[in-house]
Amino acid sequence: MNTYSTRFRQPHRGPFPLSSWQSQVRAIALGATLPSCALALALVAPLIPLPLAFVMWVVTVVSLLGAVVLVMVTIWIPVSATALD
Image 1 (cartoon, rainbow, N blue to C red):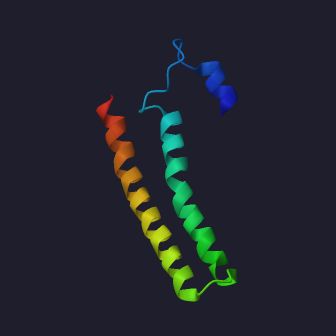
Image 2 (image 1 turned 90 degrees about the vertical axis):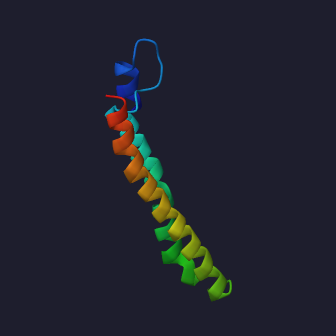
């Protein structure tokens, strides 16, 4: 993606508009990071040598934060794409 953005970047070298597919891909990737970490944490949680109640609490909090992030990204991407057209 770096080669593509170097070749096809805007002449004034500013960021891509929010409606471009590059910005949407970056937003999706950033939005998917926390839920992916929550899934990985849930998979390795039984192996962590801490009290199980604490580990499950951390997994629950991270999972809920991941769900909130996914909802916000799902709402933000279509709104930002249509607002700038």
